[in-house]
Image (cartoon, rainbow over all chains, first blue to last red; front, side, top):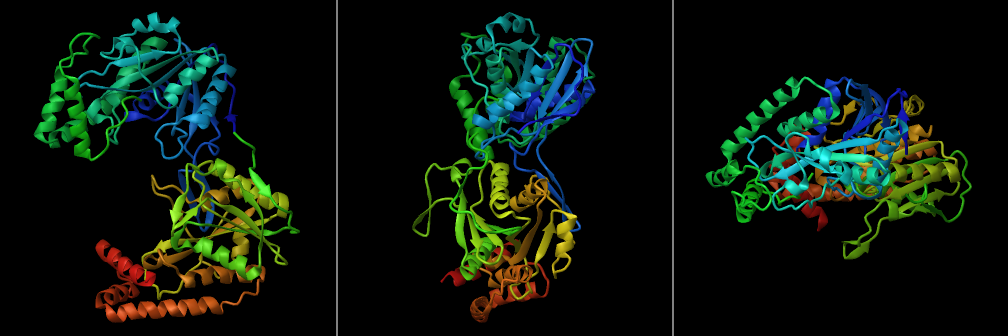
Amino acid sequence: MGIRLYKEPEMEKPVLIASWPGIGNIGLIAVDTLRGALMAEEFGEIEPWDFFYPKKVIIRNGELRELEFPASKFYFVKTEGADLIFFIGEEQPAEGGKPYAEGEKAYMMANLVLDVAVKFGCQRVYTSGAAVSPIHHTARPRVWAVPNTERLVDELRRYENTVLMSDIEERGGQGSITGLNGLLLGVARRRGMEAICVMGEIPVYLQGLPFPYPKASKSVVEVLTSALGVSVDMEGIATLVEKSEGEIDKLYEVFPPEIKEQIDKLKSVAHAEQAEPGPITDEDKKRILEDIDKFFKKEPGDDQS
Amino acid sequence: MSEKYPCKVHFEPELEGASLVAGWDEDAGRLGARVIDYLNEKLGCKEFAEIDPADFFPLGGVSVDDNVAQFPESKFYCCPGKNLLIFKSNIPRTEWYKFLDSVLYVAERYCHAKELYTVGGMVYLGAHTTPRDLLAIANSPDMKAILNQYDLARDIDYESAPGQRPTLNSFLLWVARRRNIAAASLWVPIPFYLVASKDPRAWKKTLEFLDRRFVLGLDFSDIDADTARQNEKIAHIRMHSPEVDGYIQRLESNQTLAQEEYEKLAMEVEGFLRE
């Protein structure tokens, strides 16, 4: 069980930006967009076989040629703003059919990722995921930010289009972040490293659908580029957003009128402050979820990345 | 993580450069398990080791099958005088690499194994009267050279489709290659309407190869008798159900059936063979 580094680049206090798949693949798309735009170079990986079942086999002329596993790779780039290490996990090492990692394997992977970060002098970690929110898909998704130390709260308040858990109606600063995008914050804290999870908002009724939500990823990229002092070409992700909005509009059109009516109530949600009466009631939220779930014949899901 | 190889060895068999034959309890027609059980019985094999299930199976209770509580088993057997060891197991649900590596650790450490053969069945959308093929996939040119000496279908090209995971046998071949063990997976296509019951012709096809490869001196008259009984039963269904006969005739003429026809044929034959 280990790490394989192809090279050991010189870096000065690099920042680690890590992500694994999750709801709408919001974090993964955001981090991969940054990695691609900054042309970060692959320099290592976590050996996969202890964590994952293979994903593909190739047999040629009766001989097993290749067995491919989900990748867990490290990339680096030196920018004007900061030296950056990216970690992108193609799958979470989940067990027993669960969608997110937990327990021993998750803890091991989190530590391996941080081992590499520490080796290169990293002191700050960002992870990214999704925040399931009662918003309409025409709204600009905000970014929920969760730090692993109180010291970072004031810094996060200055991020544009970003809210803390205490700013979210009814949450009062409470919540949870499932899977490795959350666990890495805790493990980093245990190892004395600063870490922040930035989560793009996804409309509550899109959380269980099997397609990505790049509109929230775009919000995350905007926050990360500003925080890291880097600039990237946003054309690629803007194209993804446009395509995804077309698909969501098509889906919206086939919803029955009663579901549309419920969803449209969310148009009036203007990110209410805590303690302010919200434009839709809890009953409304519950009904929307139930109607959507009935429409897709699925059970109501969890409400966080 | 617990110990690297969670195995219990009851005694050390006297084997040198042995070959390992491995099969799983769950595959099409339970071919792997039936072939292993047959070898164990005919060769008088003795259990000598097992893998502890705790790391590899969810042990939150037991499943019940045919009124009896089941529990995952992963056992090794040695065959006196044949330089052969046999492994039969339920399919692990987690920690697959550790499990497969443990299988090969026992084979190498206690039996100095040099070769591995996995046996299994795959679903085939054809008629039961079609001769059975034995397909073989090697993990190295060395094993390919060994297989070339036998009458096997061994020029397979295959790439798993997106979202379709490789078989555990492919994973085992890959782990064997990491340990420099020459390995092959052997597959017999089993007619879909025999998958839920049994296909003695498929067992025989696999056993014939193993018999030749390891000079086991097996007598297949019991399997031949089983095949004859099954053929009679299916002939009886065909005689009394023109619909079933029509479906099988079309398969015998290399025609395909509609999805509901495949399902109906499987249901009719399985139901009758179960009685």
